[in-house]
Image 1: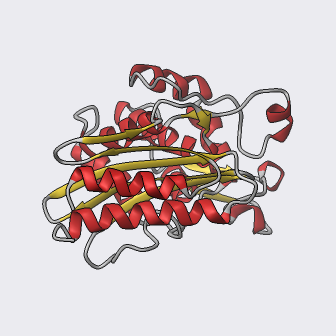
Image 2: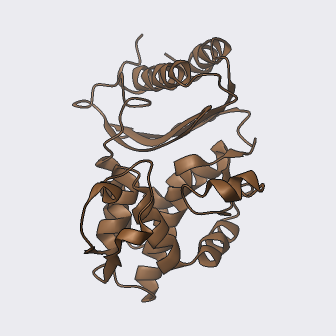
Length: 263
């Protein structure tokens, strides 16, 4: 499958989806961009720049990844994650919280990291990386702020930039890049982009996002010497299941392009 055929098949998959869809894919030889600069509610994709800022501060000595952070019961919030279900006060390291923020999209861990890292610092990082649409405006599960018009935003092109920086940028040491990539690789939510890939043949490191009417996923995908970066963002949904299927189909098309080029 060549790049032109891949793009055509992706457009066919998008046509079957009832929502508004954006796709950005950076391939070894070219890019596929479909509504890639359209802003969306970020949902949990906002956790990718939070991860980047956490490791940036760790490299500069602003925080210690081994620093112990209290997880008080009164600061726990619902939605995705595990910390809200535990019965006692506990303490975890910064790196543990960043890991939970990504691999199970833990909202309590995310809010604690926003407090520790600083919302202003996270937004300053987004600006320094020249992200056009990405902004942190509220904590996780803060529906009152959402009702007042404050939401976290991003776009497919911005997320691709974040993935490339996480994987390649000299802004971070090789050790930090490897640790961030390892966290994304341990992702527990694999029903979208990775769902129809043979995980024994490809390496995938991904981060999902979802809200009512919103489904997102982004990933770094490697097959042998080839690496692709992909972000699929969908909103305007009456129900979410069809969008999850659309994202899984796009993931399968990318997998076939990388691992089965003769199709």
